[in-house]
Length: 261
Image 1 (cartoon, rainbow, N blue to C red):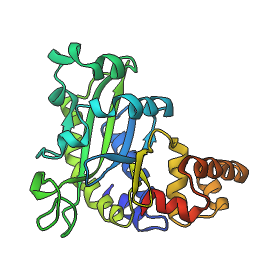
Image 2: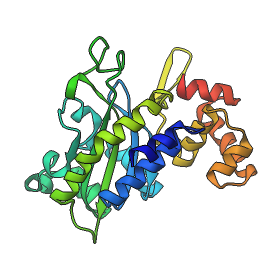
Image 3: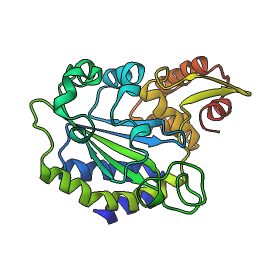
């Protein structure tokens, strides 16, 4: 399994093939109903989401209304020493009746359980490591990314065996994915124009637009983006023009600057 993910990470395009292999491994071992991968910034804010089995509408609702209420938000687990966190540990059943997050988001979307698998970067100079700025977690490192695994009805909550499998595979995912992560730059959570920091851009860019932005950053042409995302080239162009308007930019270079630099 580790070799499969590492081989994907070493291929052209590096990160996305490795991520796909990691998601497949988690699907086989832990059997989530949906998986979400995300980056964790130095400010402990999540960004760069990749959705596997979750609808964009549910994801946008989360970002717009409930992200800051999430008991498993990165700002809350940045000092945790474990690498696999469970909803039962962060939001026990005894308090869910009083939880807005449970009553208005998880329960209406039929989510019965959530498990976070954290990936930490222990490289010298990485945020959170000794000698670098940031909050320290397990082994002196701050999570650089994470997988959010969701179980939805009629599936049952994650079992003790599921949690054991997640803990067993976590070091393998970390060893295979973190080197590829270092070659990437996460998307900003807030756009910048000059010295001004604007509002959170995540709810404004759709998941598809964020995917396209990352592929533009990686140097892909419209034709290559269309091939990778199974879209028509005119559709890619339409998405880009809409993204330019949302971000107040007029070129791919300016868009990369606003989102990544």
